[in-house]
Length: 382
Ligand code: SF4
Image 1: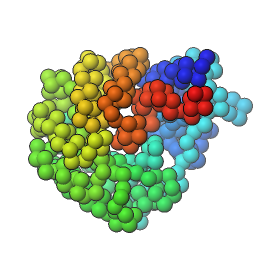
Image 2 (image 1 turned 120 degrees about the vertical axis):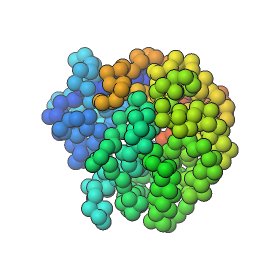
Image 3 (image 1 turned 180 degrees about the vertical axis):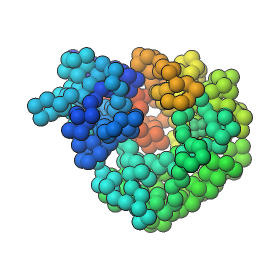
């Protein structure tokens, strides 16, 4: 098998694991050192933390979503970790990402820094600033979204906590960029919040030349987009989620009634002019509309320099879509291969896409890496 064939084979396994998850017992999870020496991922209702991710032999990053029914399993044998599929060895000597040291530190006011700033892939310090979304109050939340706010459980991180934790991650050398996300706060207060938080970070780090992304709901008042840029953000994200206008109306009722599909697209067009080519991101969720509609959106956005990214759907507990399934791994692979081809043909470079959307799990990045020989093993074999 050539290196390129092996890369495509690993990508097929990765897509399967992203859709169907991976089995790992609490005992094996504890042996990995997750939450102690190995970076932990989401708990998904489990008692023991599981490792956040591992890399395939050729270097594809695979996020671990625990699923006790998966054909894939992480096992421990004779001092090493294995990945098996239906009981057969797939990859030997799995290695997990080291836990950053700042995860074990607390902010001055006593919060765990890991709860303030998560280290995701590619040196990205991710800040989920609050679990509040005004659309949820009005029963107009996006149907797939499991953001969980309600009386008594709303959290809001302070600018001081964020700046202190980001500085700790930067000082440790594990983070070199920032990504903010969260819901829509009543009266659009998230814009003031972002502005305050980025100012605090700039002050703590003593520099303005940051790669920093702000995820906001598209504003009707386009001046807000300029405000976000002036505050110090270099990338803006406005997630339309669905390109088909009618399906958007059904799946994203708050976004539809508050902003509207046409205004959302206008805001993306405006942002592309203000932030520049390759500096605007727009996420989609896969499987609620025919594949060609999502690709139509990705193609239009690519033509104006906006990076469209299709997230693999996982149904969240308690959401109106609980129990719904994601399209097959093959469907997702096809969508991402086509998305990679669209972006490559549009003049966007891989560096721009990876800068704008720093998530190493993105399958369209992986297709891009294979097609343009960007994986180290492919460069060596070329
Ligand atoms: S806007 Fe939609 S996706 Fe974003 S937090 Fe609110 S409900 Fe969730």
